Length: 269
Length: 263
Image (cartoon, rainbow over all chains, first blue to last red; front, side, top):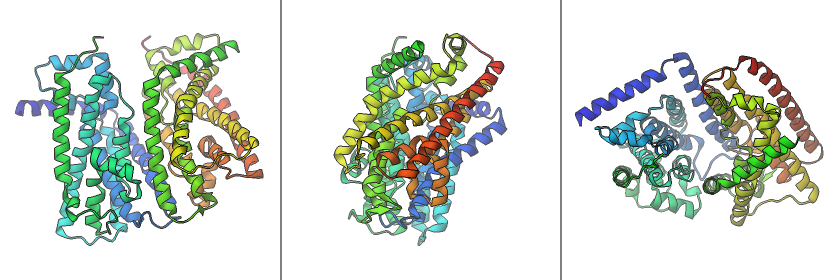
């Protein structure tokens, strides 16, 4: 394990150094990414100003949901870059994945270390700014529990999105191509988590509660943190299921990943 | 001219062969259409119309934007850039057809294919779930078709220009990401421009992005009348002409700069 970890850090260091070869261009790209991604929230904010609230939630309250999801997704997208099915699919198609399997090193570590997209910092910065806007606009009755729950939630969301990436990468063992449908749960999941979820039709809510349990990682916890009315009449404990759900999903995704590797058949090309 | 139509035809057929990918994309865009529609419905609450945009119009807007993603290909389009980096551009420049027309042909074929197997089915399914607003007269349908044609020309010319950056720099992806990201916001893709404050909406309408997405949808849901329609078409024609001329000028400069690697 220690050998694996030190190898992982060495791989990541190489990745980071190569991406920082042109620092000025890197900084430009990160900032422009943050700005472009932030435009979605700006568009939402100016639209919301015509209406006042969405489902009884104010701009600041939605900003907390939005910022949290963007920040966590950005973190995950950086850490789990290797499992990004957009990049992992071609690895399987070209047969490059076979090379990784032949090396006497833990395969999960190799995939984790194979790619580390540092420019995702743009999304992380964007999420952070939106979250700070939320903090300054929303009236939150901060208790110690609520403050401590925020970092826990970030950790849980990173694991949650990460497990979706691992699951998505694993499916390419069979499909041999990236499936755009997965975007519904990853990027779509993060979009849905940016809103107070009771506004969505029942079918969408059920999909994101029981198939991909996104609702437990953003909406229910935020109902507790903001002390909002709960129109879905969920029991109070649902606000605290995030760690349980995130860890189980991550564990399941790793199981599926190992199952996929065991049944992996090379494309032979 | 024959070469141009042959290019359209081949590209159209190529697009139709990617059935699984198209179906998967269709479902994805449809789901996002549902998400966006739900957000708009939640915003409207009991109001039936805001800033002249009815709730049915807004929901139709959400479905149409998603239907047009594949057709206009405005999320990302780096096909030309890739040919510059792998050297195919050398052969493409030698073809007995104008380089711009060659890529335009490919794009029209791609767009037609995407319209038939992705855009139209998506909108039909979407219309089963929601009360949508359709054009009320044959004239309105024709105006919509014309505005979509201009929109595609604008969209393509913009993507062509952005991709030409690869003639100068070995990593034009970053420029592309920024350029496409800009178009998502200003085109009204995220939220209908009608719901923006007037000054912002008016600014977006004047950009090539507003002209290539927002305006055709406004025509479709009947949210523009008389002089405004004329004005919209004027802006569209202005951008078509400007971007095509610009594309040719930049291309002429780029060819002098181009260094072909690989091959």
